[in-house]
Length: 127
Image 1 (cartoon, rainbow, N blue to C red):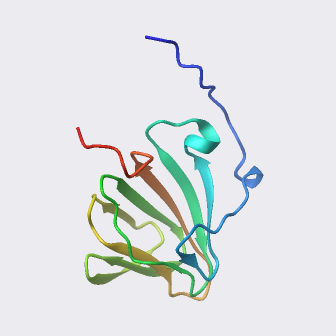
Image 2 (cartoon, one colour):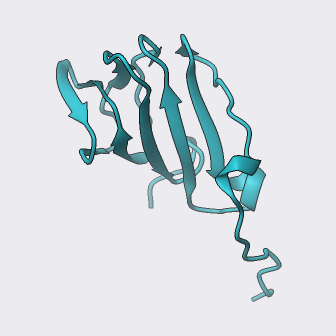
């Protein structure tokens, strides 16, 4: 087996720009912290998101990806499989593959949350 040539690193979050991804609206921004493009990760997509008031992502699901959301600050609505749930600071959400979901900021201040997704692409076959 060949040696892994990726490098470990420490980086400050302030060095990473905020981006608005497709199907994210109204100031739904994310910083891609650890993913294939930024860190060469093979199994993890890790990002911090900040949604301004009224910002949202469209309802969607993933074929094989699992996700964990961890709310750091603010309050919003997490739509999961046909139902809305209030998501607040310190709440965490697990989403298995195939579950329709969306998140929106219904509060008056920014909604800040971490998202971990694995695998990194949604076209990998389940083993």
